[in-house]
Length: 362
Image 1: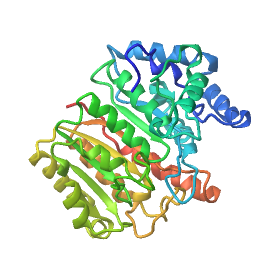
Image 2: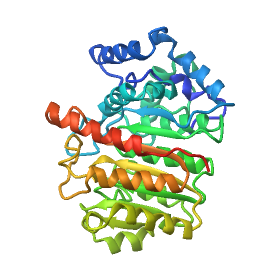
Image 3: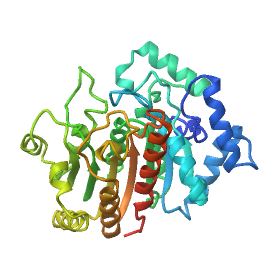
Image 4: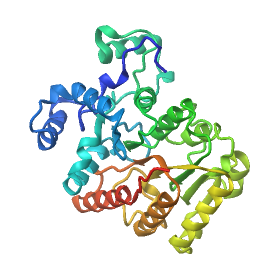
């Protein structure tokens, strides 16, 4: 998205939890968090830390790297997914402290923005100058989705072995991830495992092209074999399965059918499907509302009659054991919604999904 003369978008990355550009009282939690995991550094040094990590990763990349995108442009009935990345990290690094070293921080997310295509030239200039300061030039990305795409393109060019785990945030963010992967030619021979209660296959929503309800429609259009995109857990849709499969060529597995299947057998069948299509790598995108609301109540659009957390966890593990991952994401965790028990239950389930990912190289 950015012009070739643009400085690295990675210089805009904020420390973990610092990507929500909100009032100062909100940023204090990010400072407190930073001191837990980087006691020997100052938070102002985060851009230098990012530079040091990327330099080291050219020769010795980690199993995966973490990128937070705390953007919530209204992906559900209730907002709150912008707080998912920090809550998930806080739980994960207590159990896996080594993962903190693989964290590149947050995309700087102006809460009122989503995609640059929705902004006037005046707003692009104003927000661009606020983010980029004196280095801003016309064409530089300013909105969360554009910044995510550009930043990932730059990072993934550091080494072909770098693999992102993106944590959000609403599910539109996955569209930016796939835009980056497509730009880099990494969607060739790619299988996609997409957990969701909703199809996200609208061409536009209320005249908006890039949002939580449209991102899959745009991403799958770039696939030579769209049947490699498998949606699992669908149960809230205006149209039946046949409509979506005919219109977009995707494969759908609705929740009612999935619940009747053994997850081990289901995963084996999916792996066979991808291999028949010639898929050599796998991306897993997980909207946590694909899981039943009883297991993950803290999400923007909780849906009943979904998949059990254990079922999802098993499928993730078995599929990623068999086909090498090139990336994954966890979206729509909203820990500020519901009771404290709801939040704790939801974060714990999401962490198990993270832990189930097998990051072996092909």
